[in-house]
Image (cartoon, rainbow, N blue to C red; front, side, top):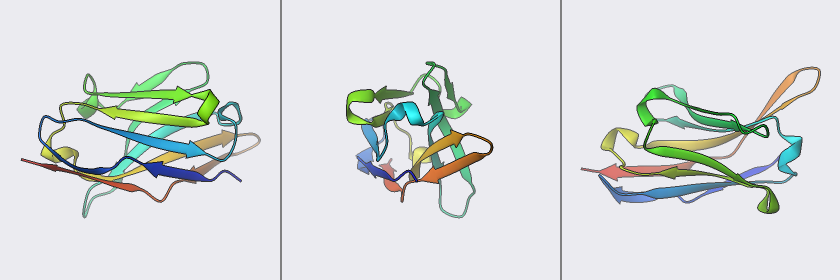
Amino acid sequence: QVQLVESGGGLVQAGGSLRLSCEASVNLFAINIMGWYRQAPGKERLLVATTTNGGRTNYADSVKGRFTISRDYAKNTWYLQMNSLKPEDTAVYYCNARRVTINAIDYWGKGTLVTVSS
């Protein structure tokens, strides 16, 4: 079982920055893929960014060049640095941990709200 706790959401003006954190209850080496997803009101949850222990990263086209995902193994935490925020980035952001053994199991945080005002 993996427990995830997000923090760092809030209200920011367009063009501003925020950093989200996701602290895991296990060592990050026990997680195959660490990610961030977001869900805007009335819309489906979409991938924002992922990273692996091998250093691979993947970003949604809409955030490339503005968002950066990173990991801190000493703190069992991964981050999403969000720069040049736009109103369309407004959403609840969820961190996700995927463990792959025989099957893939996804764990989710409760979400943190990011609101970008114009």
